[in-house]
Image (cartoon, rainbow, N blue to C red; front, top):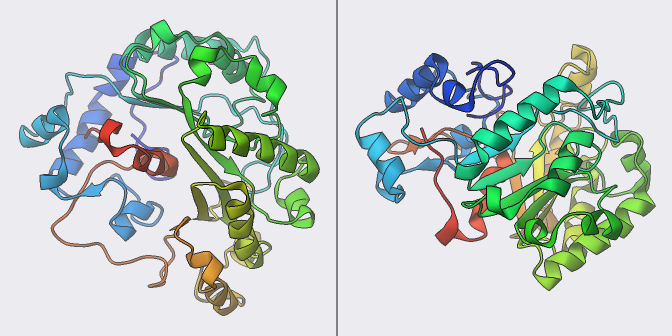
Length: 357
């Protein structure tokens, strides 16, 4: 199941329920029914880029080669006999930054937060053994969060027998060589991919959009992470920008930075309002909209040769043909997940699993 920004239905609460109870809850079954009947009535056609662009989990039924998934589709199962294969650990919002697009204030939870500890232990004890892909974190930073940092430092290979990839979504400011060494070699070997949020390609814009950040430290850490990618310790590296009015002119420079770092992907995503902007402020930043005063210039920037380098991925949903191709007939939309879960599976198709209905 994907995040609340794309899916308007909560399937359960791990603070009070088991993983199995949440995974096959009544709400989960209703969402799967909506996939089987083709209505996708719980999905956001506005926010989900895959519904617009026929990409990622949008597949022809004939292309589904996972036997369990194909069987679940064929039999229209709503109660699945297997547990979640992909885990997006986003139950701790702790971060060392307070980016305006995400939050108004700095959030760092206590290491002794009992609710977070309880959810983490539930996931670890009940879902780790079946997990094939784990992502940390879509809610904060994996190194700034006391709970996620401890998890990374105490994970054992034996509790993750089916894990194919551990993905880190980070701002990279705390991903130093010293921090890397605090993670066991066995777990480091399973950290195969990373998405690093930059939201800028210059120091001046970075300190505005990544409030609390340090551009020089970021460049040092990106060089280190890039070295991990070149050495093969990482199999996929992505840098990303949430595109808005004050940074869209830096998109070509971001791509050039990506080439310098030898990344696999440079990701452009659309600004959303997670309750941190007033309506007026958000509209002034939302350059994707055709009626925005800078929209025409934005389109010209997107046509820049750098912005059309093969390493660039555009994830926009605004009503413009450059961003949002029409939904194609003859395809089935398997349930959308967070963007990077689809991107990282392009690294090694032979080992990738399809999302379950």
